[in-house]
View 1 (cartoon, rainbow, N blue to C red):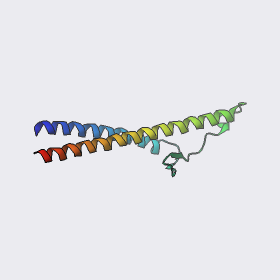
View 2 (cartoon, rainbow, N blue to C red):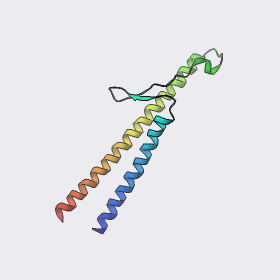
View 3 (tube, rainbow, N blue to C red):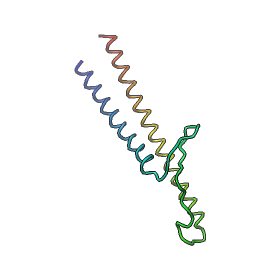
View 4 (cartoon, rainbow, N blue to C red):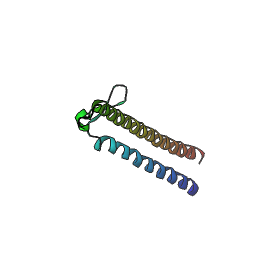
Length: 110
């Protein structure tokens, strides 16, 4: 049983570290994002922040194009961070399932 507890403890430490990392992504998405983040019916993030305006870049000929590119980059960053958060959540749930299965198997064979 002591060996089993060592393995279960290791699973728990991994799950805790993954939960922390997922939380950091979520914090960045919700607290550092300059706007409210919501999710569409398809589950994809919708960034409702104020878009970068062309005049942010002064009176350049292509200020509008630059602003559009800046907004596209931020949208891509939000999407990638959300995917990382979701994948880490899946790993965390997977580790919980592994631990539950190990415990059930151990009880059944004890």
